[in-house]
Length: 284
Image (cartoon, rainbow, N blue to C red; front, side):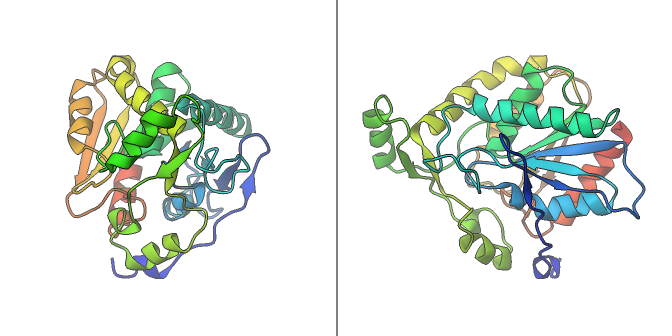
């Protein structure tokens, strides 16, 4: 576990025009998997955050794709940190799904979302039956656990109607995401990591969180919940409650007591990655 922070593989370039995305090809020497992954990052993150996981998947024969969600990372939309609605991100995820299907006919597509990306992935699966073969939720944001200051709520109340693109700070640090000190430094120095969100974006997240309970009974594909032991960003109780309410029989939950919110970049991540492939392999 001590070597995990020492190696940071090169990140592939962005592809696309309307929807920007990265693609990690399966290693030529690895037996090709029968499925692929579509990886959806969370609020404030970017597609390069998936590099550790995507490289691990590639070495095991899995190709993966990850959209750069509008308003974040290297997307051209301005102001940064803004999107009118989570439905925009959901539409981009579905558009990328069509690209993946066209490039890989006959192969199953698994969607994996982290944090707010988990909320987007969950909605896409429930609202578009048949689009995906499996759903993985990594610390999904079904209920906020962050402590916003009073000033943020006052700004939301005063400016949402006439200035929905106004942004406010998202009160988290890299140390709340990962115990990997070396990667904390990488994140803190990366201008693509953006800890702000627009009022419209944040309000849309809250609206979509309210709808989750109604959507849950419609989920009809295998689902895997991957949850940390300590999460400063998300209310973990909401995730466990939602898992209990799912009616589809093929549902699995795995918990990692020592880990923090961003399982894909925290120390011990390779255990999470192994568990992910152990789950996905039989379902291809």
